[in-house]
Image 1 (spheres, rainbow, N blue to C red):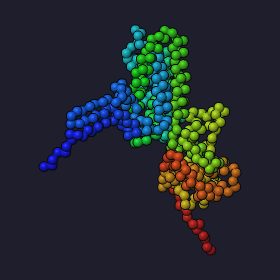
Image 2 (tube, rainbow, N blue to C red):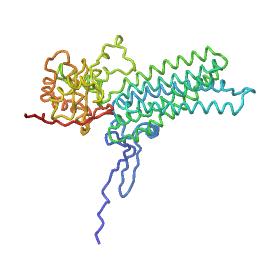
Image 3 (cartoon, rainbow, N blue to C red):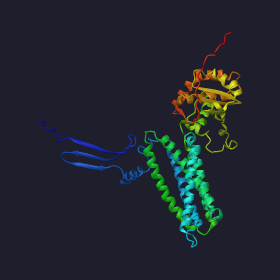
Length: 439
C-alpha cells in the first residue's frame, strides 16, 4: 500500500466562485485548510449573493455575453409597454363586463355566454385568416409586424371600451375588437420567436424565452395591481377613464416604437439588402447592422416627409418569384426570351418591365441562388434608367463584385445564408437549340 503524504506543514486554499459564465464569476467563499485548522471567509455581502440569485430568474444564463447588445434596451421598453397594456386591460374589461350586463338584474347568463362565445369565435377565425394571408411575411418584417401587433391590440381594447356606448351594435363592436386582438396574438407570437433567435448568441433561445416569460409575469402582476387601483379611482367618472386610457395608449405606442428601434437585426430582408447594396455601390463600404437599423422603416406606412432616411425604395423596384403565366404573348417575345439569353448559367431569370425588375426563380434553385438573384435584381433596378446595356452591365458587376460584397457582409456579422422573403412561384426552363429547316 502507498504511504500517505505528510500534510502536517501544508495549507491549502480553496475558493468558491459563482456564475454561469466564465467571464462573469464572483467569489463567494474562501477556505483555508490545514491539519490543525480550517478557516472559512465569506466574500461579498449576503444581500449581493441573494440579489444575484434572484436576478438569474429574469435574465438569461451568462448575461450579458450570452445575448446581443440590443437585448437589454429592447426588454426594458417591452416591459414598460406591457405594463401599460395590463393597466388598460382592466379599464377595457370593466367596460366590456358592464356592457354585457354584469351587475344588472335584466341580464341573463345564457345571453352573456352567447355574446362571449361570438367574441371568441370571431377572434379565432380572424387569427386563422391573418395567418393565411400574412404568416409567411412575418419573418422578413419582424420589426414592423411587432409594432403592428401592438397597434392592433390598442384598437381591440378601444373597441371594448366604447362597446357600452353602442348597445344596439354591441356584438359587432366587440367582435371587431376580438379580431384585432387575434391579429396581435399571431403577429406578436411569431415575431417574438424570430427576435428570440436573434438575441441568442449561444444557442440559448429556450432560456431567453423562459426568462422573458418571467419578466412578463412580473409586469403582468404589477400592471394588474395598478390597473385595479386606476379602475377603482376612475369608476363612475367617464372623463377620467378616457383620459387614463388615452394617456396610457400614447405611452404604449411610444414605448413600442422605441423598443423596435433598439433592434439591430443582422438577417437580410429586402429592405436591409437594398440599403446595404446601395451604400456598397456608392462608397465601396458595407454598413453594420446598427447603421442599417437607423435607416429602416418600422411603421406600416412610410412617412418619408418626416424622415428622409426612410425614403429608400430600391427594393420596391424588384418583384420576387414572378409567375411566368402572368406574361402575355407579346411580353414573352419582347422581354422573357431576350432576358433568358443572359442567364443561361444562372438558376434565375431577370426581366425588366416598365422600370420594374421581375425575378423568376428556377424550381431547383437553393437559398444562395435566391439571395444572389435578389441582389442581381437590385443592381439592375439601380441602373434601369441609366444603362443602355442593362443585363450585360449587371452581369459584369455580379462577376466582379458580388463575392467581395458577400465577404464584407460576413465580416460585419451579417447572416448571408438566406434572404428573408417568401417565394410562392417557381419555374423550370430548358435552353434548346433552334431547329433549322432545309428544303
